[in-house]
Image 1 (cartoon, rainbow, N blue to C red):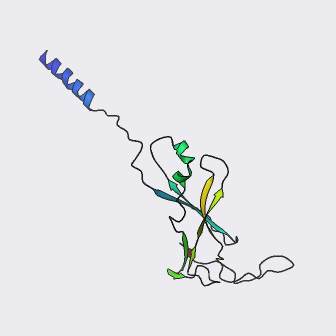
Image 2 (image 1 turned 30 degrees about the vertical axis):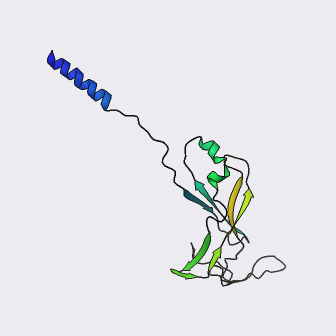
Image 3 (image 1 turned 90 degrees about the vertical axis):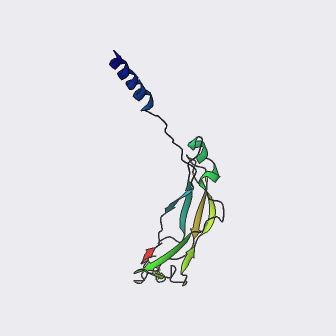
Length: 154
């Protein structure tokens, strides 16, 4: 009989002390950038979007609608583009001999959705080509064989 009581008490102790359901979904706030970019040398304008990845107390859907939750303030970050050939930095805009392209920040109005419509983007009007385009007037196409983009962009 004493052995039975001992096992019942032992099982009870393990039952109450072995399982915990303490799951912390929200971590301490940490600001992490998320970069969206498609650089297209055929376009005259290059646009990069940098948003905050956020996690905080409260409803994430409501937080996503607040501009400060997803956008960095104007002037807080600097977005640049550098070009490397064979591991050596060269001019990012070869025509204007600009070593580094610096993007300026701007606000655009995005389509309505899960996030705030005001989106901060970073814009540059620099040509990424090695040579200037020579347009054939009859076809409207570039005929310059040296007009190319080469290297790794960082």
